[in-house]
Image 1 (spheres, rainbow, N blue to C red):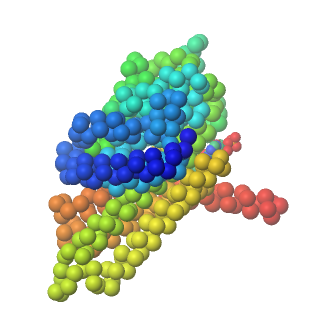
Image 2: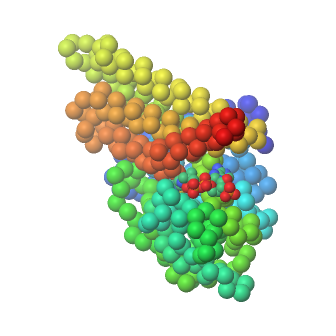
Image 3: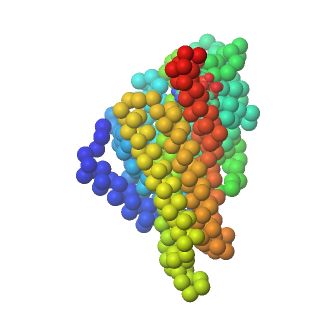
Length: 388
Ligand code: COS
């Protein structure tokens, strides 16, 4: 349910204060220790961040997509590792259940995901199935009232902390591609589930990814999301349609933060006897960055409103994710440039945010996958219009 405007603006102000007073000051420590302090995680839980989009009847805040992106514009201003802590619960780690789960699955898991007591992870990618998500090899073999799961999932965000996985696995070995894939909820303590060593990454220290291995892991038949086989790929795509809007919003928040950092540095730092901000070559970078961030904000909000209105936003979601992630990459790069030599030095945040932003163009679908989704839809419509 949509919040009234005063409650919404108070909520957004509370998040902004939390980001400015708690998250941004802790960035250096998190980057250094690769760990988000426990008291910050507790504060995130108290603010309801783990349940932003979980329906109110299941204990979440029940935000609309528009409200969620407004909240994530604020949260995205801090280094992305903080958002990652709760974002799999808000997004891909929970949405499979929220969108396609049975009433029993929703009642069993959503309240604990909303409170942050349970961390949810989305397990789609495999060593040989990244962009080609329909080619997953993890098998779920039906055996009486159970399924037996075998396979390895790769780069699973928050897997080291997860208590629950949404797992896409093949239930029909005879059907190649998307149609043979089903989605399951798998509890961490199920015998046969294990996780690998957290990967050493280029950026986003404090957010953890690792392999998840299923070795003769026996699940009750009730673990099949929605209770219908062969729907798992579609569930994953619906989850990603929403997830990509969330990522676009995170990119907008970070883009606006980096532009602020760039400007503050440029008005303070002098060269040739004048502040950097006086130089027109740098002013062009500020202007391009503002236009990039503003366009990404408008596109993300528009797509979110369309989703709230019940429209299919697969194309808009891909446009927003592609544009916002590419634009935050450009802005992060300009920020390093404006900082000059200091931009390459750890003490300044410019180099960290540059590395952190790089992932946005890759996960939840690379820029090239977004291009394919957009172009496929456009050409299909054109064929219909042109009668081909
Ligand atoms: N919502 C609902 N259903 C969808 C859908 C969506 N957004 N997108 C596709 N589908 C359906 C299609 O309608 C089709 O259904 P039918 O077989 O009933 O016609 C089915 O799913 C297969 O779709 P398609 O043929 O388009 O699948 P492809 O194998 O060609 O894959 C891409 C399409 C490339 C878009 C998909 O594999 C993808 O998104 N890959 C990237 C995965 C990704 O983001 N990975 C990151 C890891 S997750 S953090």
